[in-house]
Image 1 (cartoon, rainbow, N blue to C red):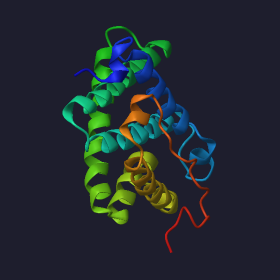
Image 2 (cartoon, rainbow, N blue to C red):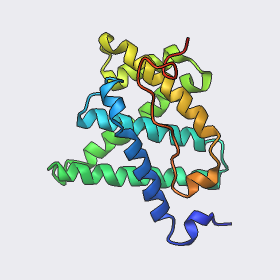
Image 3 (tube, helix red, strand yellow):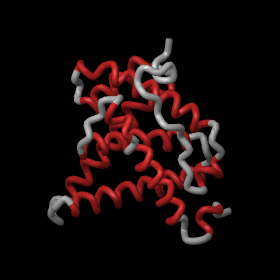
Image 4 (tube, rainbow, N blue to C red):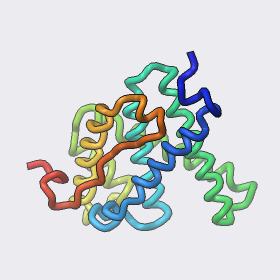
Length: 187
């Protein structure tokens, strides 16, 4: 049986909405103001990777057919990254090499975040965030820990989201709390 989101137009419109929602959520100013994410190409890339990871983490409990939505989003991500590289002036011969690094970064983040998130290991997830988002700079340990806490909460919230919402192109995450609020740091 073909999923409803693939019936109309092969799911492209839904996948673009879902990927667009991930990108929009990743651009929320609080990540750059409170969580210390660098407001650079690399920092924005890390936020997209983190939020795409959250979607894939949510989808892994679904059937193989439903997990196909994740492949579509990954393909949209790759298409977007390719277009951005070309827009930044990367030459046609260099784009494939850069795209290989993008894919390696994506799978590297999945490997770094999945285990700690599954185990609810805030310390290990904080270390992974500090390394990937903040370049292992100890001055950002508090922000990395807050972002790791956010990821754990976001993953839990997404588990409650019905697949139909995701298949409709929705990525319903609450805006991240500012650092210092009781929602951001555990007691």
